[in-house]
Image (cartoon, rainbow, N blue to C red):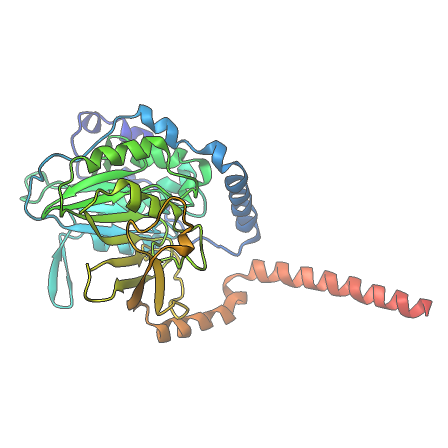
Length: 403
């Protein structure tokens, strides 16, 4: 059954969850191998997408057009006193890794360190749901296929609520100007047994205990669009003093402003202009970097935590090169006329990383086996080096002969 046939099935059009599949053909997709990032053809195609995204990014930005779509804001009151949330980012590389994460997030419960954790009522996808670049087939086979196979249906008679799904785009989702992302996530329907509930490339959710969750689309690097600003301004009007906010972005929010002066611009704008006074941002959650790292503010003040968790199935990023401390602007301490690097700072300390620094160094030794796993890339480098060496030898011979 194709994606179009599933989307147009009578049950899904009536808003009903998908039925339990009875054959593998009903979950028809190709189990894709991990992306060969050093393959010359992959490098060429991905490089072309990156160049086009950088050169034409401002012209391909469709966020302003989203103003014509329905604006889905959270209800005034949360219906439940308890809500479990799963966060997955950087998902769709190869089937084995992606399905392993999807399977763990789809079980009714898993046990971690002796504690039973139920399946999340809300799944947050934190960016880069497609690799190596946005395309309908890549979304279908690298993301949707593994997640439908892990949770193809839900039991309507269960005492648990039907799980929901929200997502924000990462840079790989942006390579086609969000066309594929909007088709996959920003329309009513289902991905396996999870209901899609957003209509734009960003979202707002009201959580129990006076917590709010904002998923902000700041991946393009351009200023926030007016439609998104109006959306979060409307959400902010429903917030009360002393509410607490979780900000979810596709870029790590712990970037050292002294080193990446433009990495914090949009995030600082959100905190300064959109988050109401007396509302505390207690957690900033992001992906992009394919590891786990938790930074915390110094004790004594409001507990502010920043987590990077990009271990959804993509290749692993090192952790041994992480700074033990980073400095970021304090909330609402940035005046519009003062550069971020001159704003008042707060120091965040690295409290937890996975893999550990020693484990990361050990795993990095596998780079010595690049010739075995990426023979086409090493062959290309060898041919290029041989050609350059041959030309250098020829020129040296010519010079010697002339002398």
